[in-house]
Image (cartoon, rainbow, N blue to C red; front, side, top):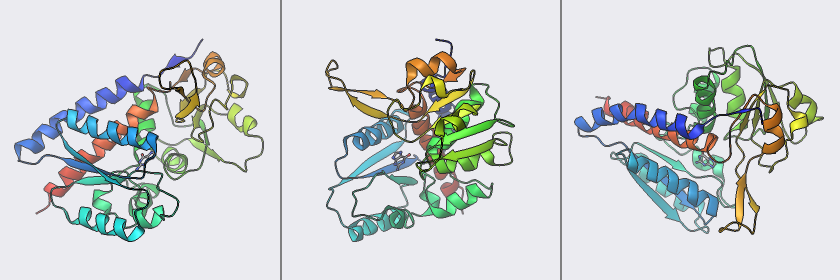
Length: 295
Ligand code: GUN
């Protein structure tokens, strides 16, 4: 193996430790940053992600809550909940964990979130601000990937970035952030998706390759430019009867072959995942600071 392993766990720990002083400062003023996560239905992966977010917040001395609702919950019931969360003075930020059950219009619900409490950065107002280069809350996974690159010493300006996957949570906002006129952007970005012809040809041009389509081990070493940086956002459960849980986690990259060719690669788990959580904590602290500095 030739690729350097980018240690997302260690970089995320660094980001969390940089937040502790700001949390202490808020607490000195009598304010404990508080976040909530709304979890609808019983998707096991979502339950794990939300649990990790809560545990991380608690360990940092912030306050947190998970608001669970059954899969059959109606749009109107969630609208009522969101309006309550918007009105609560003690709650600085919250997220609605995705995916939601099929009968719920996710975009319409996100539109109801107070943009000042939208610590996921998913509200159209925050997406618009990011797109114009005036960021408020940045979406956690793309912002975390930028931090991973910068803190790993990987230069972004002037590179060719290829992103696989155009979803609203990772691929699309990632394409926007990396193409902004900025020392953390200025990359030439190609956004690939299910209708892209010759995916492999695009991948082979990439200095930075970002995998966010959720297809286990589908990108192989022959698709990688030698020395490229590979950021693997995929977290896929594949059956494995030799493990206690009956499954193991793999990324969208076929790690054994990709790591032979790439210059640097994020592992799954321990790469992008911890960065997403750290950036959510960062957005929560930002929300608490902004809301408590108002007259
Ligand atoms: N589902 C997968 N990633 C995310 C995320 O960052 N935020 C929310 N709310 N749902 C997700």
